[in-house]
Length: 245
Image 1 (cartoon, rainbow, N blue to C red):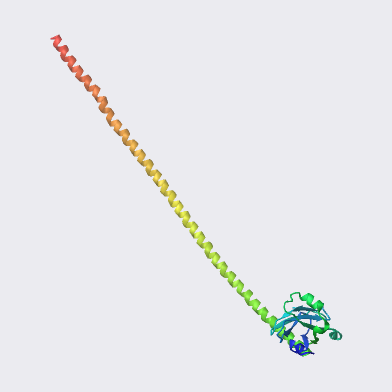
Image 2 (image 1 turned 120 degrees about the horizontal axis):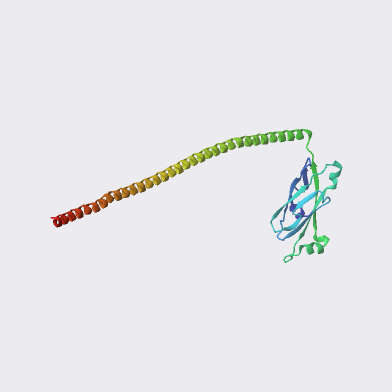
């Protein structure tokens, strides 16, 4: 293994370690560092591509830079006889300046230009005690989550009761305002009726005064002809008395 290969793979140095049980995705990180003064292209390959998801699985490392690669093992039924079939290899090559087509660079690369670093996979299955401890931890976490959920659900009814109380208060206030509005409307109607009665009473009083005035004028007009008749009779009697005598 060359100096570049030894420095390129940092963590882990020679193994990819995964801890079971493998009922869920298990992720381990691989760090690559470029100690040279040139750009380095890399590719990550595996003998079991269907079992792993590698991000990123290729790229370029600038001089003095480090790249972290996530290797995600997919859930599977662990078989001790299968672990020797899982291997990884990191291929690196110097990227000449001015080269942008990396696919063409890998395709045209000579075997002497490639540098390989091989890694083996290590599967750690938890012991019986570890399993029991994990189960206890899981149960404890489940109990804590359940208690939190109960506390949250217990807080909800109180908030709901508070909301109901506020709603009842609002309804009572609304009813009170409606009653006040009804009273004001009734008072307004009574005032209108009272004003109408007063106008009718005034109209009746004015008509009565007019009729009484007319009646007071009529006797005077009737007494005037009678007076004239009396005066005329007196004059006629006076003249007749002179002629007779």
